[in-house]
Image 1 (cartoon, helix red, strand yellow):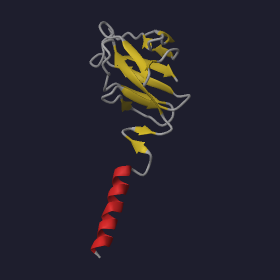
Image 2 (image 1 turned 180 degrees about the vertical axis):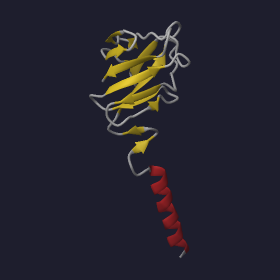
Image 3 (image 1 turned 180 degrees about the horizontal axis):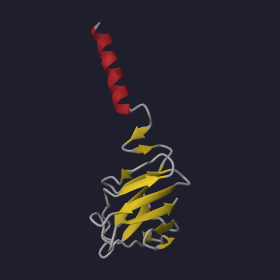
Image 4 (image 1 turned 90 degrees about the vertical axis):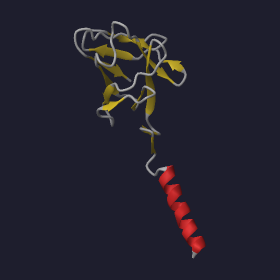
Length: 135
């Protein structure tokens, strides 16, 4: 009886710690992950974002990560209290570094593609800016 109880507890522990839905730390296996990074190489956490498919109003995590599926458009809500365009420069990176060529447009008129370092322009001096990334 004692052996059976140990086996049952081991099975339950394995089930709990392995996770059963493919979801781990806000990331599904079929999603892509980029990071929002500032000019000093620090992650920018707490930035609200939403993407076309699946992700609705999340925030970048402590690593600056945001998650999306291929073909998504993702809106980054760049609030003045979180980032300030007068002093902050923002970059989109993956696990290898800056991501070049992401098309973006922002409510305050900035648009273009990220440069080879993943840099994109935004302007939130007067009010918060919303930038849409075409992923």
